[in-house]
Length: 285
Image (tube, rainbow, N blue to C red; front, side, top):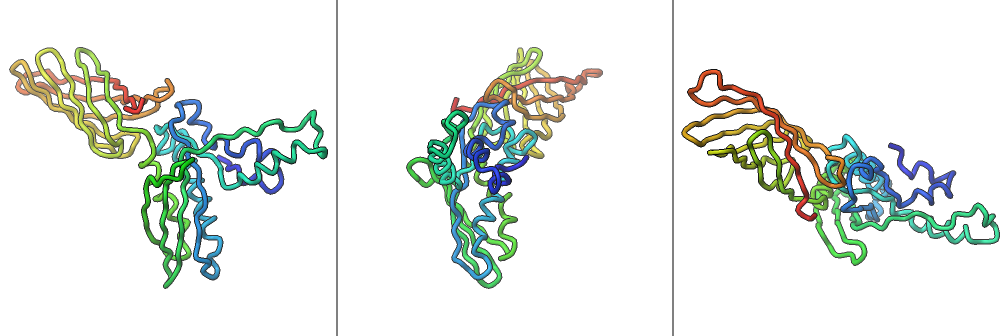
């Protein structure tokens, strides 16, 4: 993934076409965009030698968000995009220049493609005693209403290393959710609600004469292990297996694909492997 910033110094017209466009193209093909975020200004206290630390942390957050939201990233399920925002002045200047007498109007860019951010990520860094204390804010755009504010610290020469942790917190806060769960397999109908994909959750399956309670233990947002206990019609049983979560390709939903093996207590040769497909639909939809 090449960030737009790498083109800025020599290809300003190209930059302006791409600036504020999605930096995560894989998301656009798989999911409808529910949230668009951008990194704004992160100020510093002008501590000697650290005057540009805010810019560095901002660039690192931008890069981390692109990677996390892109296909295969840990937040690939999130219907979100990242847009470059801090060079909007360059876009405006280039837009005006394109309409002047110095540009061939036959080939001039008539309108620069832009996407407005729903949320701006900004904040501040202060230095002292070998430490960098940072505060990050998430604000709505337009309006500037505070959505969240959180703090942390690092060694004064390693503040950019906080970008991954900061970005995870931001995406956890603004990505759509919770989700309703529907679906199932042969003779079983599953329903439930999932609040967070990286925390344990439960759903209930109903089959003729009984129920099965499924407990999911994620090892990441993309999957983990699942255990179930069933009871009904005078029998009981249990089983376990694994599951994966991935975009379904129909704009905004995701699918849980699970395979489990279980047995009915006290019944010989009752062990069976089952596969189910469940659908996760953001409740905001």
